[in-house]
Length: 467
Image (cartoon, rainbow, N blue to C red; front, side):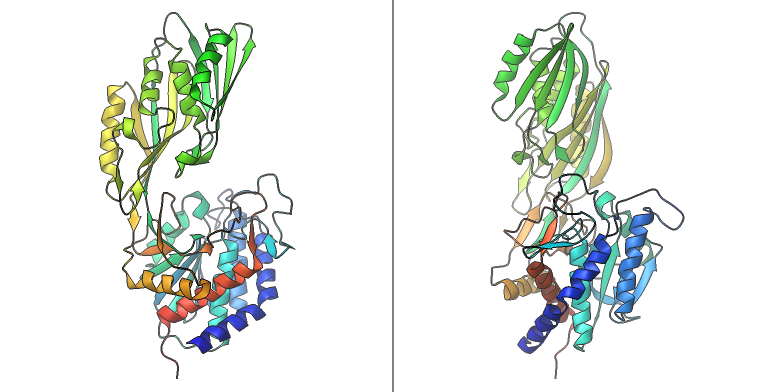
């Protein structure tokens, strides 16, 4: 097998420039979700990038199929059911601002390739493609088929994968190179909730005219603003001083109104301990001033500033497999009479969404608030003892010289709602690739290494003994 491993590595190293140019072809297409059109379920650009990727595969002599511009598949063996699937996505998040390099092109600088999608997830898709090309070019015989699955809607709900599954079964073994090494085999369940209600306005004391904070349900909010009257700037700042050093507060008087601005620290909702929640800080501040705003005080009690484990919601729990529950009040709007908020809850394998929802329904009702469920997903876990995971970890160890292990995450990967899927790559521990941020990149070395790992994984799982 060492001869095969070395031959695969030499072939992939020889394809460095071609891999870069094929990646450039995909990165040049700004495949952000767009307006649905006939035959283009996620807009023109996602359909265009799927066509481009499948065309590259067709020219390589691989067998392709387009599932109505939702998903494309690439097979080594036409007509044979795949034993292994590699699931990548070709859609991207918007470029945003702050780039040093052009986001929709490849710029190589100091051994890194810069451009939107280079790590998430067009670069890994190219690595997976060249893994197949290596096996094909070297005439390595496989006893079972492998299939690449190229999706176009991972960043906005994975409706592409749901469509594909209505047409085809997923392979019995499946990995996505859309996260990090070594192997992510456990993902917490996710609930995205709405909390709303009419507010009892007091007849005297401070009046709250407006609250607005947060811009994404899956993020710890770093900003919240409020407009109040009937209270002095000095009173507000005295109470704000008790919030601690992770929060900054400002008051801007205007006639008889006071505009309050709270700035915190943003973080992903799966890691709320890394942030400082500006919305719950604002609720704590206003609750200390607001007198008769019972519903705002209730919301502050349910989501106390600084608490992230759902204890006050009576849903706190943890297990050895997936860790502890997290709960974030991530968005809020209040117009003086009605409050609307959104919350993100990530829960471990030991609980179900039904258990948590039932608890929160009762708790909200007891506080004159209404709960609505916008999204629900159960925890995902593939046992570490499975032969599939042991094989993935073994290949990782062979190529990195580092110990392989399994990871639990509060995030959701592309395989979250599959039966046996895990995340395997493409980010290596200790490397910062700035996925979803400006100057997203992948090193040339790691692009090639991913292709080598994928090729050898395919050979280990789908191969047969060589003469």
